[in-house]
Length: 104
Image (tube, rainbow, N blue to C red; front, side, top):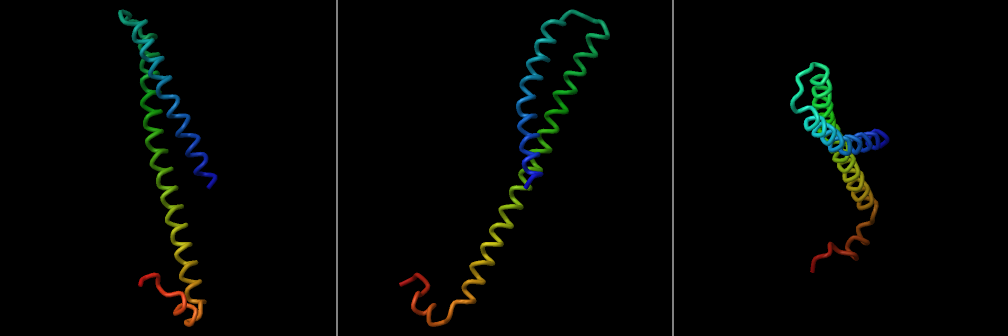
C-alpha cells in the first residue's frame, strides 16, 4: 500500500513537471533562435532530454500504479467471495430454505 502512495506521488510530480519543462524549453527556443554556440545547444539538449525522461518516467509509473490498484481490487474481490462462501457453508439448510434464493 505504501508503494502505491510513492507511485502516486511520483506520477503527480512528473505530471506537473512536464508542462513546466515544456514552458522552459519553449522559452529557451524563442530566446536562442539564431544562436549557434555549443553552450546554448547543451542547455537545449538537456531540457529536451529532461522532458523526454520525465514523460517516460510518468508512463512507467502510471502503468505500475495501474497494476498495483488492479491487483488490490482482485485481492479484495477474492477475499469477499471467500467470506461469502464461508458464511454460506456455515448457514444451516433449514435457514437457507426459509430465506430462499431471492427468486420467486
